[in-house]
Length: 185
Image (cartoon, rainbow, N blue to C red; front, side, top):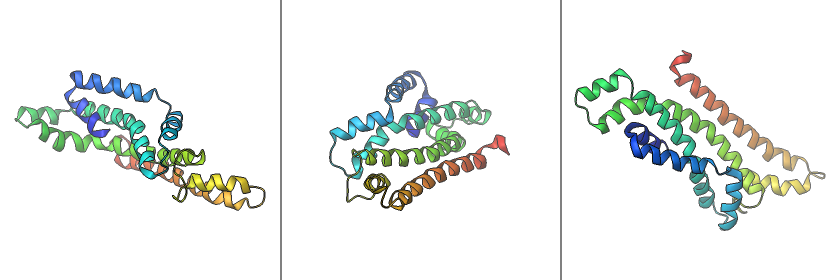
């Protein structure tokens, strides 16, 4: 997503318009409903269909952030100076724009990682994600939900671990934003 968004933001034109419309289509699909439909058709229960689905519906968010960061960075004077000195598009992208546009992408990707972990657990809890014997907090929560009256700790440990992990990634993304955002210094 970041590569596609970066190229669309740098080159613009029809490439940018095409990518934006494709991203709009993917943004229109609710991620949980799309996961239920997609993974109910693909019944392997292995890790790769779940990862493929998350990539399929997760790239537009990163793409939009990368596109916006590149559009902002390419207007700066140092990029114009590099072009005036004859730098190639590849050099301009890799040496001048990418280092200055990567911070927002890293922040959003870190926060989104927590969301994707929760999405995988939700899909596994609902029975369309990962299947046993694959390890998943969603599977653990689903199997423990029938034992809630007799052994509530069986539900609390995986649910607590999932909540702490998602919260940790969100807080990590917030800390990375604070560290990388020059406006907050």
